[in-house]
Length: 233
Image 1 (tube, helix red, strand yellow):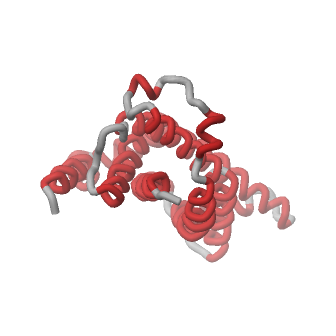
Image 2 (image 1 turned 135 degrees about the horizontal axis):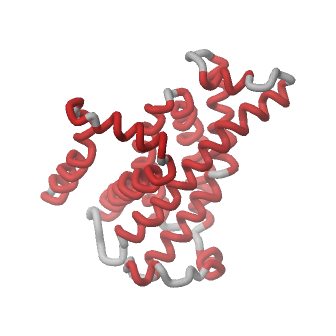
């Protein structure tokens, strides 16, 4: 383990330790802020944690946590915006999929939503899985492709904040994307094999624990997409 690893671990501990000190009531405030300002909290949660995940991905791929052109600050801004999108998607699919299941199954309105909000049961697992599959099949491919586009834009502009705010050359970037890796790795493996079950667990948890679990998944997501973006061929 190198010096940079110790520094990185210490920084992560500093970020996470307030959650585990009851006297600070940080966890209570965190849950309150998340409930009252979900999109603002979504921005900061993903800006910090998913960016940490990308730095871990870079460490795994290149042996360093940062390098010239990587652009930690631009990546954090992108993740913050994407985090707000994830919050929106969770609200939409948690409300929409149970309603859809009620209609398809001929159930009384609110039946599936009640299962999802109720105590643990196989019915709750089924609804949570349906929400996860719908969200990750419809929202996740667009989300992950948009991330890849912004990631390429950041790299093309040297990772600078000034370059980040230049217009994105959308057509040029889309044509040049590594669609083979995007399809074979991200769409065919990451989404069904990891994100379907991972978000099923997310929707099974109480609302306050969903926040913390989503934050953990944000780190894993950053690692996965970073590795996918750096993969050749």
